[in-house]
Image 1 (cartoon, one colour):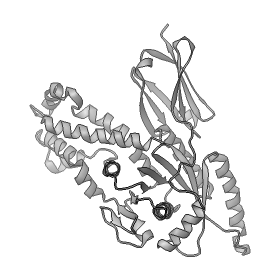
Image 2: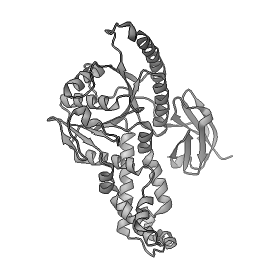
Image 3: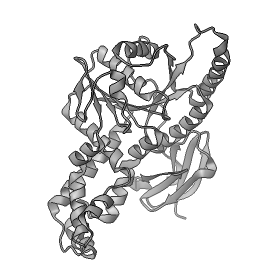
Image 4: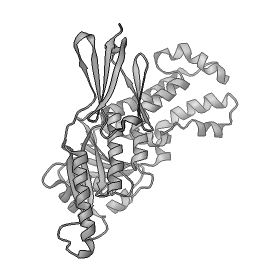
Length: 389
């Protein structure tokens, strides 16, 4: 199953681009699903069809879905919440309060990720196109598998050692024993999150695409998003530039706007080369309905297949050097070196870029090596490990 995630600043037209992509894939014969994870849903308006929390058929090969947060939490996170509510309420916390505090940071967005695993296992779709929320929410969603497992492992016992440590963890809360079945259910939940993260980070099956307008402020925010996507190891293969004023518009009133767009289009080329640039014009009417979406798909993709991989770029890599040394390369395009922090424990490093943080598990072969240098060069963080003297 191919997964294509569209993200970008709010208001740039992600929903239209995602809908047009999905419709084009469906017209090519792919069993396609387009999904909105934005709480301010507009996917149904774009397709001019009423949508619900489960997939709705649009054409013979196209379905659409607007993720309902509460519905998804109850469907996927119920086991975790029941476990934590029981743990805290036995301590004396009122159940209503316990229910509130058991919502993990990013939990609502994370419910969307668990749908993706269901799609992959069902085999019902060839392509899933995700109309993601604006960038901040999308980054929280994509970082959740890293953040959630770290948080949960500090609070409840997981894994094969659950039986041995459950009473020690439970005793401070007034609980003598934790139900092993509940632990197994919660553990599986976070295993699924890890599986989804691996799927989204695999360029063979998934890709992120950035949607921009030819406006300098939008381009700058999208550069930061590109950096953070690389931080988490998510592949990006294209940038979709939306609402370009066509050359056929010759009214002098629009000339300054066209000139500014042309300058910013050069900036987009400069910033995101060699990513593929997809272009859609500013249409004369409000975008909506299958006919207009098909027209947009034609403008974006021409004769190409939207489900293909447009660009395969460098990913995180580890090189073995002479003398038992290693060099870890992590792409961080556009990152400001003054906003990059690195922390090390034996088996992992914590990398923070701005307000976003990621824990990167190290291979066993370099656990006993020391970090001797970390340099940001040409958009890549190069971390050198050497044997202890």
